[in-house]
Length: 75
Image 1: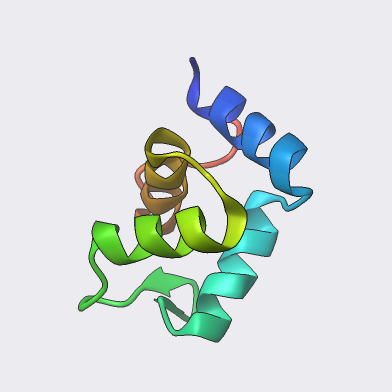
Image 2: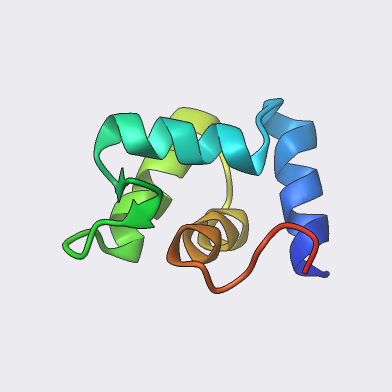
């Protein structure tokens, strides 16, 4: 599955886009000015997304990768 397919599936399941998740992560303090806070670990993001959005591990890690800047929507 491509990275974009993960993001598309996440949006279909949650109704939230990658930009929406970035805004939510800013509010939770995981992102600061669009950048992943240095003290935030993948496990924290995965836990949040599993609990609040019922996302699986792979989909949660795709969001984490997006936050880290590893992938961008459309890549």
